[in-house]
Length: 422
Ligand code: CTP
Image (cartoon, rainbow, N blue to C red; front, top):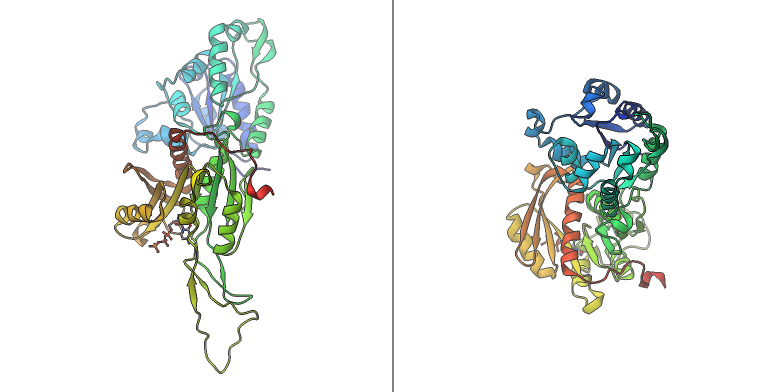
């Protein structure tokens, strides 16, 4: 079974809306948090109360509900969703989604989300077969949307043909499959064909066979970025120091311990299109780690002689020509003069982008679950990502980086031969 997901279920205005209630029940039974959104049309068929009762949480039905808007309700719903399901998806709702309208909560969520979207169309067979609907479905499909149904059968108006919404059970199964695949935008994703390398976690530098020099990095940001890149269609290599996290679905994970091993694994993963260095690499290692466990003795505590570790980011940023990723991204955790220090780091290490965060204790970011980021580009541009969970900001950041990579042009190197293959 997958871990519970946040699913936004948009219920369109059609007679099949009542079958969406069964879908809520099934998704809740699978352990997911279902956030129902009813269009104005849907409210002609079912009540927000019945959807809320089954979901066990609030059903949303109005774009400009005051309390929701105070917390930017629709943006939050859209951003925190792991998946958006539209059932029933009416011809009108799909037309509005295809053309980027955002005149109610349902379409605003569809426009603001970067989570995978599954449409379960339901309508009169003539409407389904109409060239306008076909063109809209095609447009949505090309942008990466998924579809289930409609099926053959008798539709509400008594006509027979293709237009009946897929069975709620089949929709629930498809949702489960898509979540299990860590669902990938695949060939349609903004990073399709691109190879992305991410370093994450701390490094452990041995003192003796049982002791290490370490730091408190959890690896959470790097893992979330790897997952986000994968969902956007990239081929992802995640080089990780010791952390307590499971490998994100579909990502190839290389586990390392020391900074030197991390450097080696990174060089083997090249060439890549984008490299993102989130790892908290130990600045120093013990020059002569003991071959046997150090024992307490008459000579007192050992004195550790340290030497500097290689700078992995700077090494990769300095590679010549095609060996250098088209976009080299570093992270700078600072406690004061954040922008100034991060800009200096950007220049010193030769990166294209430095993502700064303020880890001074008052922010609660270090070791916490939320983060606030400042994206600094070598060309002087800056963009702030407001405070949100590390996962949400990882997604936003990866979208940003994907757009920057696309601006730089060039062909993706996914699927080509890599040093690590040999
Ligand atoms: N980094 C790296 N290899 C190292 C040290 C750092 O790849 N040996 C990368 C980190 O992954 C991060 C960026 O460089 O993306 C900045 O790391 P940070 O520890 O903030 O920089 P330092 O070089 O240690 O600078 P300072 O000591 O001044 O904070």
